[in-house]
Image (cartoon, rainbow, N blue to C red):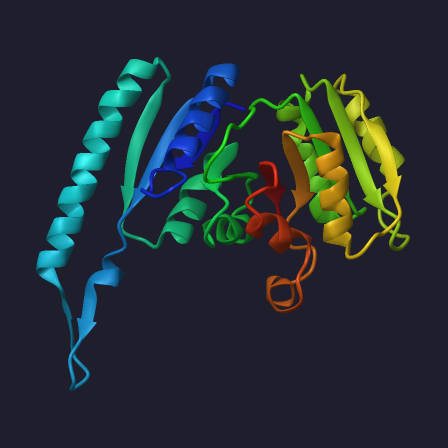
Length: 260
């Protein structure tokens, strides 16, 4: 893991994201890229006869604010001793991050808001989705893998290997809901080739799949949960619930590593 992308968007989770990304960059000797997005489309107004125009004063102020944020972060990162660059985009944040992530090994985002889900769907790169507040242990000491035998879960396991190699415990949790897919023992065999000793835990459903998995993760005191993103369609999860939506929306959940 040598290339880490993190959102520079200002908000409640900014400091948690930056600290986590810096910690991982130091652990892996990685280069850190911070992306700032200022979508010009948000400053387009429409008149009553179908025309449009740029709200110049508002856009100028937003650019000034971004200039100050970029300069302040550049000064801070220069003192951190981590190789970095700062990039800027005029696209919407999700699209900008997905584009910038094409040659990244990991994208570090906040779990609140839609961006983590957007990037997980649009990009082909693992997303580390973090809570807005609290202490985050990265690299993790204890990790859980939510395993359903699907392709998304398999992709998440492969992406998580660098974060799992030094874990004290790794639990592969399979909810005994329905047969099919790759068996959990295959995951143990795969991880063992990297020197990762994992334990398979079969859990009987107690409520919904996401509630059952959440309880097992809590009991494991996991610092990280690895899951495939949106094994069901995103619209279906939005309407009816699902594992990805559940863990993205619950602030008490541990950090998530997910990929679609």
